[in-house]
Image (cartoon, rainbow, N blue to C red):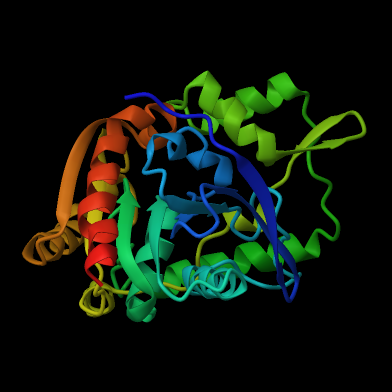
Amino acid sequence: MSSVKQEVSELSIPVPWGEIRGKAWGPEHGHPVLCLHGWADNCGSFNTLIPFLPKECRYVAVDMPGHGLSSHRPPGVFYSFPAYAADVRRVAESLSWTKFSIMGHSMGGNITVMFSALYPEMVDGIIVLDVFGFVPTDPKEIPRIMRQGMEEMLKFEKKAEEKKRVYTYEKAVERLLAANPTLSERSIQTLLERGLTRVEGGFVFSRDLRVNFKNIERITLEQSLEMQSLIQAPVLLILADKGFSPASRESSQKLTSKLLQVYQERNDTVVRVPGSHHVHLDNPEVVAPFICDFLQTKVLSQQVKA
């Protein structure tokens, strides 16, 4: 399977606090596909995958607020999944997209699924990469997590203007590799293209430090299942065998297995592939055939019928 060199253009979408930046591939009037990256990544996460995907689509990958080249949220404002879902709505409106497909990796996959539940009439295909689409939290844990996230934010605000650490490029590579030991060197360099800003004496990470804080807006399994039931579009769920492990997160396997069961009952496509959490970036040829098949059979062929 060979990738084809495609024209890529930068784009900027105005939002009330600045701009959301991103990149676009493919014909302007092609079938729209919005691509949402994972936590602490940026839209470069899709650079290697998109050239393998159907040429008749228009792919727009955005840097979520607080990531890559996009503006950070205003002071005092929390980062949360509902806020990101609203950003997706802003992007769609700015692009005049009324119906589109969404592909999301990790955090982007959670935003994808939440948006698709809130605006089911706008979404015609959902591709979720190495995450289950929701992060259900035990109701007993929610107050503790909310408080922790609030305390982190308040402590951060007291520090006044915290200077970001300045790195040499090599040290920045080391830092990102330490946080993501499974990423290939090529993938690290791809993410750093938008993940670093040049300053006097070296580089700083461009993302907002506040994206590291605990997400204070949590939902239970019951709420997750209610949202899942609102989704109308077909779903392709790609899980990496050495990827996201819910057991090591706040959500236990029991909660995610329930979500998985619902996807299967809905006749959605769940596939497991060899690879780590960033398999779509490190080894795009592993996931591309499943995505191509899904887009061709579940999305593009339906357009022809419509």
